[in-house]
Image (spheres, helix red, strand yellow):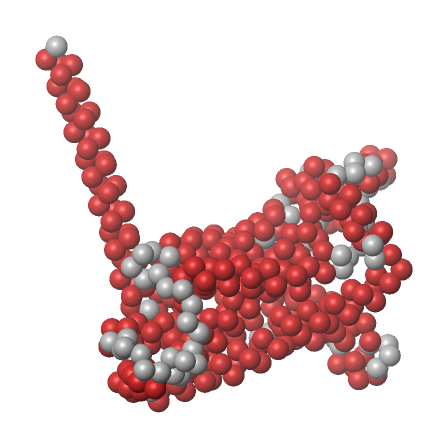
Length: 389
C-alpha cells in the first residue's frame, strides 16, 4: 500500500489517501459519525453531571428513603453506562483512529465495554421495575406493601444488580475474539487469556447453541417481560394517582392499621411524601418506557436473525443489514438521551427534589463566598503586617 501511494501522483494520490483513511476508520457510515460527533459528547457530559447531581440530592439525609435509594442506584448504573461510551467518541477523530496504540486498545476492549454497558442497562431496567412494584403496593394496605428499611433497600439493590449481571453476562462470550494484527495476537494480555480460558476451553463445541439459548432467555428476562410489566404498572400507578386522593390514602392506611391492631397511624405529611414519591416514580417510568420501548424492536430482530433462513416469515420481516445497523444507532442514541435526562425528570416531577437541590446549591455558594472572603481578609492582614514591619 505504501509503494502504491509513493508511485501515485496528483489527484489519484489524494483519492488513494482518502480511501486509506476511510478504511482505517473505526466507525461505519455517516449516521454513526454524526451521532458520535454531535450527540454522544453532549449525552455523556449532561448525563454524568445530571446523574451525579441526582445521586447527591436523592441520598441527602433530608429526603433519603428506600425509594430514593432505588432511584439513586439507577442513576449510578446510568453514569457507568454513559462513561464507558466515551471511547466511542474518540473513534471519529484521526488522531485516535490512526494511532496504533489506540486501535489495539479499542479492538481489545470493544466487546467488554459494550457488554458492560448492556449489563448496566439491564440493571437499570430491573431496578426501575422493583421500585415501581414497591410504589404500586404502597397504595394498598400496609400488610400488602413492601416494608423495607434503607439498609435493606441497599441490599436489595445489590441483589438486583447481581441478578441482572448474571442474566446478561453471556454477552462477554457472544463474540469471537479476533485481534486485528499479529502484534496484538502475540501480546497475550489478560483479556485474551480470559477469552481463551473461558470461551474456547469451557464451551468449545456447543458454544453457539448455548449462547443463542442464553441470548433468547436474556432478551425475554431483561427486555420483553419487564417492558410488559412496567407498562401495566405505569397504567396502574397513573390510575391510582388520579382516583385516590391523599385523604383516601390516609383512611385506607388507618383501616389497615386497625385491622392489624397496630398503634402506629400515618399522618398527612407521610402520605403527601409517599404520594410525591409515587408521582416521581410514575413520571420516571413513563419517560423510561418512551425512550426504551424502541429498543424492543432491535431485540425482536436479534431473535429472528438466527432463524431467518428457516422461517419465511422471519426472512420477510427482517430488514436489510444496513437498515438494521442505522436503526440500531438511532435507537441507541435515543436510549442514551433518556439516560442523560434523569435529572430533568426528577427536577420537574418533584417539588422536594427542587427545594433540596436549591438548598445544596445555595449552601455551596455561601460556603464558597465565605472561603473567598476569608482568603481576601487573610491576604490583607498579611499585607498590613508586612507594611507595618
